[in-house]
Length: 360
Image 1 (cartoon, rainbow, N blue to C red):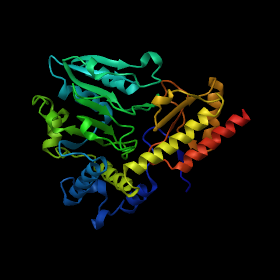
Image 2 (image 1 turned 30 degrees about the vertical axis):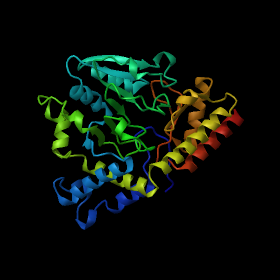
Image 3 (image 1 turned 90 degrees about the vertical axis):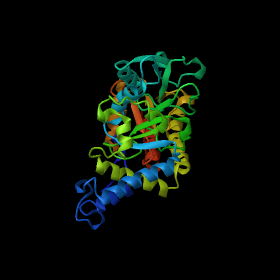
Image 4 (image 1 turned 135 degrees about the vertical axis):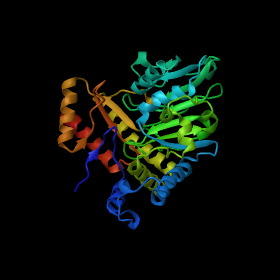
């Protein structure tokens, strides 16, 4: 079969080799006579999968011993609640930098837990850029500073991160984790739903500074306490075993591709192809994000009117390009070009964009 030109924002495309490896072992993992999703999460077979995923993640992201790796469920949306439940104590304030839909949702959940503050925002500019921020502006009662590293809806991305000298830095990295090297020491907690760059939906990765684990109130519900997952190696209850297996295969693939420096270079090249098509269109395509804030994961753009945008999306779909509709909240067009998107697919999309412009 021919693989689709899949530009969905998530769940997103997975590497062909990962899907083929999973297919090969679908009915009989390691000659066990069972599929991965049939194996007990207490078995040696699954323990090897679990530890391999953690080990590869530590290796690829250079995660230091000061940080613990946890596997949870519930996606980033559950983390919007768990972060303040565990870290926002009485008399403290959770500080949020607003850069789009998901940072707004994180703030809304934190407001239900305790006191919050907006540290910076680009909402008045329709979230076209990452706002300027000076960590000196944080108040003394700051429990943490929360950011969303990449904004899938508006197509903006942090290219350098705020200092965390005055308060722990928390980052939702659901849509750009594993896309480039990171200095994990600069972050106190990173969380990421897997369904962009890490694997399928179902597993959420949390990387947390061990010092923060002491903040979690023992009276918290068991499954909402980070300490539960740390104490039980993310095996207190049945974890999403199949999703973690696929996560391990994706991490193995990333390692085989040469690691994050190579993946970052490819992502920069893919993004440049589409942004060049936009910038060289003489205003036919209108990019949403300001150039210094452009995302390398989600390229957002529009045409001059709704009729033209609908025509573009319809003809793109007929040509085999899937998932180019912008988020339902803002419309327009969006190409999500995560790690597993082949450069050839991006080239073909740019060629389609140029051809559509000439005809219209």
